[in-house]
Length: 111
Length: 113
Image 1 (tube, rainbow over the protein chains, first blue to last red):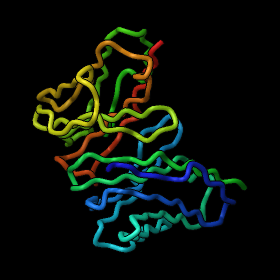
Image 2: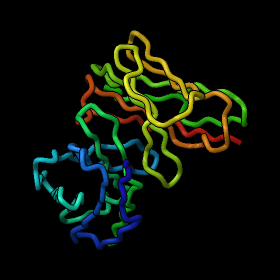
Image 3: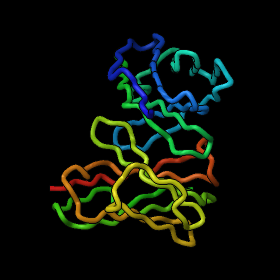
Image 4: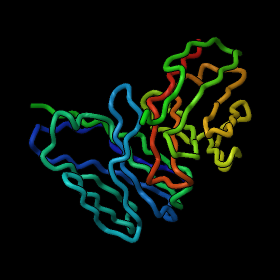
């Protein structure tokens, strides 16, 4: 089945780390993505990971993948007010297949 | 580079009408995908065009149709509009069928009254 689940809301203090979680159900998904959406804007690809990897780090972003539990997480270090947005995880079976998005997690960063 | 441009940015229609949304891909991109994002939801894949042909289609009725032109721009047409078609319609382009290179436009907000 095609279903990607995320918690709806996360609130963190500026400077703390944020962890956004995602659970997917299609075990054949081999490509997993994190997107950011700010008000009035389209989606911005933050990072992606292949299913043969456990972790990927890109500056303040760390992606962890637990393929056994079909669990994906995005950690944002030193969260800033500019990180306030909606974050979507997405999966695809192949690198050219359609993206299946989660419902999104709204991250609010307070001073 | 203008990125992915969509027009119009906002649109109001009434039930039963037809609508056409337009998308110009990022320079150098030849593949266009369309997504529907209802309020409070994640985007849902509608279809993808490559080499002027529909390559993939999501679970949307035939009222949703599209086209890709030789210059790679694309249109999304929706016939017999329903209230439930109210959503943000996002266009994304990429150089070939490569998700990692996918760029999204800011979308067209369609309201059906």
